[in-house]
Image 1: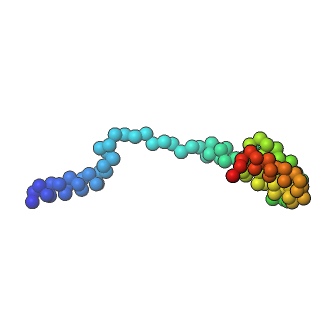
Image 2: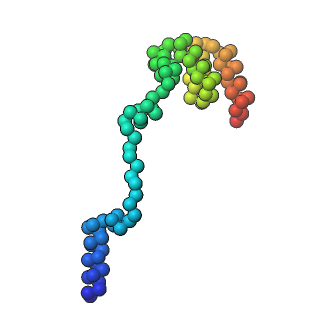
Image 3: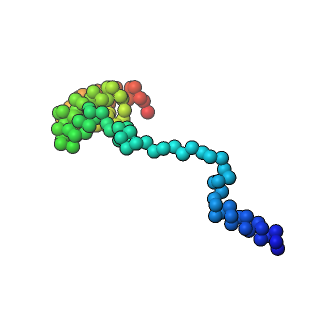
Length: 108
């Protein structure tokens, strides 16, 4: 009975003081400063401006920026908004050219 009690006391002591005191020390990474985290989230000016034009339904201005952004980065995001602006402005021939070119470059 004594050996069982010793084991229970040992377990209780370890639980009370924490098992982490017996582990090797580890360095805890610091959280990034608020300014650093914010700067990573911020979009470049052209992206912000294009988004603002879209919100205001100023498609003439937005289409120019999205065309530029799409040509620079070739992302699906810019492609979608570029096509959307073109169709809102009834630029169907240009939209069709862009879609065909995209299909050629990225089939499937």
